[in-house]
Each structure stands twice: as structure tokens, then as C-alpha cells.
Length: 205
Image (cartoon, rainbow, N blue to C red):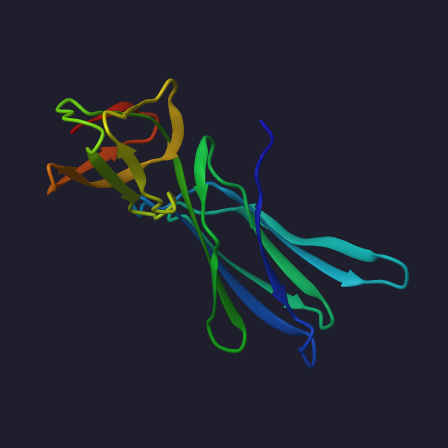
């Protein structure tokens, strides 16, 4: 499978001279907070030539047992630099990394990943009265990758998923409001999906 590379660009156009800079690169699991040791990283320089852009790798290696590395390099002015980290296998979530200046000469690039679990969602109206039944379902997870778009069901409608979806590991939060005979009741559920786990989540309303 083709390796995914996630990249952060750091513009150095305003440097007045070539200076030594230290990059602190970290990678952790977005769901568990655990570090990802052994992931490969690369820092690449790019600059404009007379007729085309030029690219050169200025450093590469692997994150240590704490899922981090410090890399020091003298950087050119009028150049941009990119940091890339290869995610772990079977990844379903890659964050937009935060890049924090750590003073005039240091940068911290933080990468977050979450591996895949597999989920089927089945929703059944087991107490249907008539076409005026109404249910609205809100769902989210701890890394907020679902978009929090509610599902609405009318009458005796439900949903039986035919296949497993690949989703990030971690906690999932559900809230649903059921209205029958002009009376609304609210229900909640939380589940945890471990990486590689297959789960069927049932909501009976």
C-alpha cells in the first residue's frame, strides 16, 4: 500500500542570514495519547531557481522510543522547509499538525494519528406508533472527525448498515431524541473502539 506522507511547510524567506535551527518533531496517538516510536521523518528544503523549483532532503531518520526527535540544521535564507512524518499502518486519522515557534531558533511540529477500527451502525424503531414518530441522532468522537452531522428518522424509519466502515479508534458519543405523541425522551450512549476491533452498534428506539 502506498505510504502516506503528511507535510508541514515552514517559510524561511524572512531570515536575514543562515542560522542554526532545531526542529522538535513528535507523533502520538490522537485517541490514547501514546507516542508512536519508530516512524520515519524527513526534512526537505525547497527554493526557486531561474526556470524551476529545486528540492533537497536535508535530514531524515526515525522517531525515538518516546515518539520524538530533535534535529538541528543550519538553514538557508530564501528557502522553505517541509517536515514529513509517515503514519503508522492502517491509519484512519491524520491531524493537521500544530507548528509552535520555540523562540527564535526552535520549532516544534506535532503530528497525531489514529488507527482504524471497524463499525456497523444499526438503528431500529421498535416501538413505532405512526408516521409522526421522530428521532434525531447526534454522534461525535473524541477526536471530532465525524463532523457532528445529525441523522433524522421519521415514522417507522431505521437504518441497517450493510458493511463495516473504517473509522478512527477511540471513544464515540451518541445522543438521540425520540418524539412520540408530542413527548420527547432523550437517550445517551458511549462506546470505545480499539484499533482493529469490529463492532456492531445497535440503537433501538
